[in-house]
Image 1 (cartoon, rainbow, N blue to C red):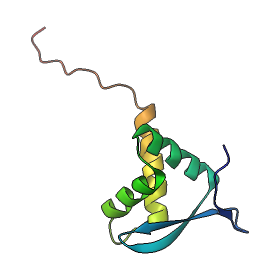
Image 2 (cartoon, one colour):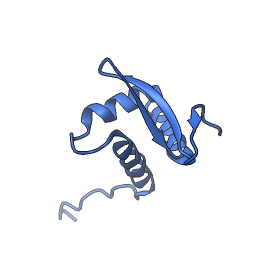
Image 3 (tube, rainbow, N blue to C red):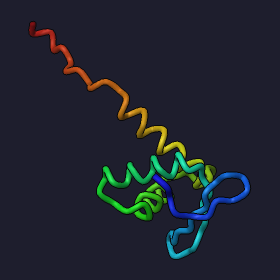
Length: 92
């Protein structure tokens, strides 16, 4: 899947968003954009909405690009985790 955006010399793809009334650009690897697009589709939201949600939830010490990468990795971890087993209440 090819993602729209501008690829820089670093191989990163830069996309622009309007967050909280301000324009900002984020540069990520194509694989992270693909993962974020899948996450947004699973949540039935646009990529812009997902990025805005991550932006609103991130701490002030974490850059947006880092927060987006962490979101993608956390979602992959959740998808790979085995289903939770019901707790044994000892009533056996």
